[in-house]
Image (tube, rainbow, N blue to C red; front, side, top):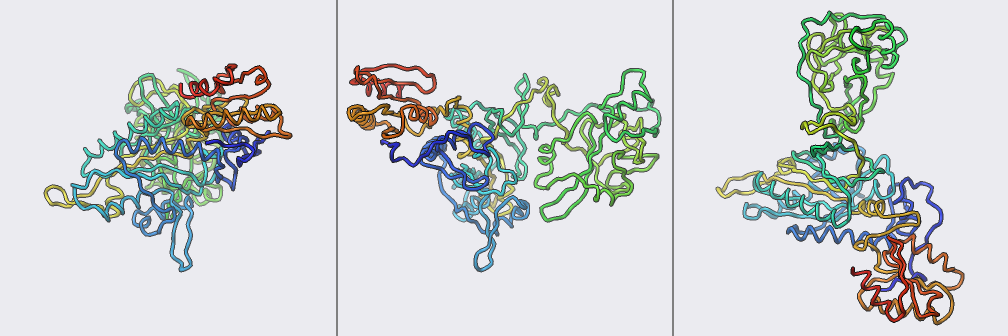
Length: 592
């Protein structure tokens, strides 16, 4: 195939789009691969669609190899299956809802667990039908609150989602491993530098869960790794709780005046000045910070929550939301705080002078969850719920008892790995794949049962496996660009070779046409810059580098001496080749 630049539907840009935050977004727009239609919604232009289709085919190849079967559901879905699993409510504002002319409710599919489950239920009834692995490559829709980074986080995107259906947990384990291995091959073929990390299942439910994260500094996900091989998304990191401490010799809790100390930093400064310790200075880690939140459940019910954590740590919003999903979380406002007169802003604590202030059975009635480090016997300085006062020597398990624990504190480099494999280090990435062992959550909700070998009805167990197909394109671009433009890997490039007619005269264009035709006849896809007139060689060279096809053939002034230049876009290496040998030499370069 020959794509002629004079006819190709593409316009390259010299300036970056104003809303572009990351290199892939800037370059995909400038090189004419995508165009913005609305916030978080993009049009694939011809060159972009060619790259996307190649990514899609790699995914399809590896899914077909393991025996998964492709189907496709509609994007417009009825409300009823999602009501049965309660996700019509749980998704809240996260989905696009609409009604038909008769007033019936529909949604644009954010994910398709319900539809896969109901289809298998409709067609299969025996253990002899299982296992079965089904997948689709389908457009998804989510009302993303903060679309960003072009195709990386949008409101409309394409996923490969597949589901395994097995008679028992042993079968699920085999299905999970088969999909996991397929993902390794897919991401290897795409050229990703990726990490496989432990993850939370969130609203999806299920047990075992892992993410495939492409390592990128522009990624929105933080994950951790240890020298001993532990790796997890920060939402999935568990804090090793210290052993309980004896507290028989700890003095009774006592309130002290701490004027003008509404922050941890001011409190620590005051303690070191007014109440110095003999063993060491006070630090923020000696204080107990209590953060007040408002939770909004999917059905609209609201409730307050207090989270206690060491004062040297901040609440990590993503970790907190991951623990509470699908509940929405927001800080308690000053107006909401006024509804709890036992609490004093800036001086909030769980107990004071025998009064329990935080907890479901306390004066405030606010559920109180603490960081796992807050174990029995630990001593804290915290608010006395009196303006200008804090309590010193407040002991967990003696003076207050929380309602439970929650993993909400930030994870830091140097924290111990939960498995004891060494100190953690932090890295950035973007989620490209996620595999879950769903178990029986959706099968039970939707009544997916089959007869086992004894003739007894049993609930099918499921796995769920997703890949961000459209997201893969910008991630590849993030890995493969330089100051001049994109540098596509051969397996996903929109064409094999870019032929540039860099000059004037019928002889030059005739030679470029002949070379393009012969390359196409040899089985290569060719972009041929046949633009004449006011398009200078300099513009053509810049466009070729911006578009990023791996091999560039320049038919220019060297033609007078019987030579043509072949340039490797990635290395920048150039080679002058005799005109009669250019096709053979280009084929060798393309095919390795």
